[in-house]
Length: 299
Ligand code: SF4
Image (cartoon, rainbow, N blue to C red):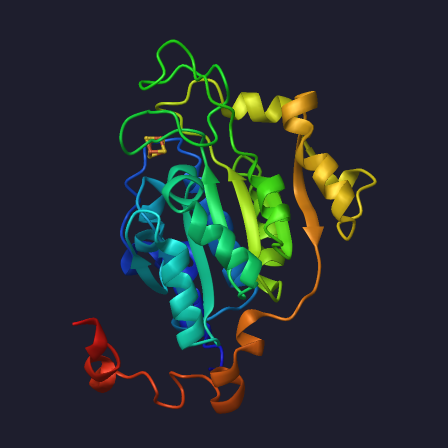
């Protein structure tokens, strides 16, 4: 579909309040930075909201689709990746972005995330990583640091955190990056690269929960982050990416930027039915009138 300037403007600040819901996040929540940087990236890439689908699971950050415009699915807890895979295979021409929290994507939704990554569907998956369960008022999440005192770990967390970057490298994601919601221009630039990447793009978004995580604050990150683009890092070097991925664990330094990027055929470009017959939605294989027929075996 041709880009309509009028539609692209729906992602901008001026029309935003009229077309989407007002964010319900706490003042200062890192998710505001994710929202504005994502909107900036979409506008700069001239992506039409009518060709865009934002999908989330459950959590504070998973309210994201309500606040940005375009089409959206606010799905079930941990099922954002599964919905994204289905949507992308039904209409490969859509720009599909998954946005959700660390509890949703790296806890209950971990399996879906890993398998979407290894299949290399052309999606962008942003984990708004605040290292805590915010919506349920402050329990330890899969990325909470060892020793973190939360409502569920009052004597300190005794679990080691997941390393999302190393995990996505091991899952064969073809684009792996991290950014920080306290740096809007860096965030928008990483998002633009992720959306433009042809294949599965994973973005670990450091997005502080100012209400329940009193340790991983904006200041905590500002003292530790450095940009990979400012040092001698080659994003085509997988082993170098692994080394950088462990710096937070071993050296208390937090690299942000593109850790790894490679080109591989996307799942949808190799899928036989799509290859043979084209986009299922555009050839009328999926339409409101035949949804019942297609899904009859489910009842
Ligand atoms: S509880 Fe935390 S994550 Fe949820 S909206 Fe408030 S600051 Fe953001």
